[in-house]
Length: 164
Image (cartoon, rainbow, N blue to C red):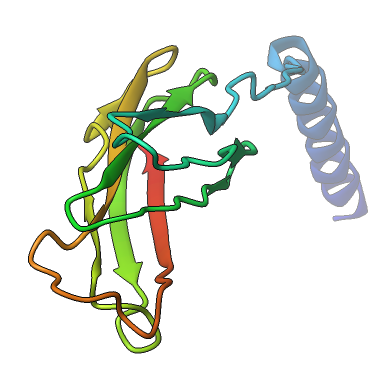
């Protein structure tokens, strides 16, 4: 009986040894090394503002801009005077953009009703390397019959491009 147990234990040890050798003979360790880098660049910005179609005698000021803001100060003299500002937006990045939101809000509550703002929208799609323009025209109401008490009116505009 003791001899049978020793034979069974020895046989099991041999089987385990054969399995271990077989496993190591057929096992392979695989190594994976990798890296990723983002090379795309988001760079949609204002690149220019230019006054055009300035009514005689009006002062279009010195329009200023940064990558994300534009400021102008129009001085109109008489009814029907107007100044149009052409604003250029460029996609200087490598990621295509699409227009998400455009909001132009003149201050109607605190501003003169004799000053009228009209605007156009920039292009819907702005692919990498492309540029688009939009306009803001400020006009002295041609129907005005007297100089208003309030002589100023501001406009706030938000143009938002997002990844296409």
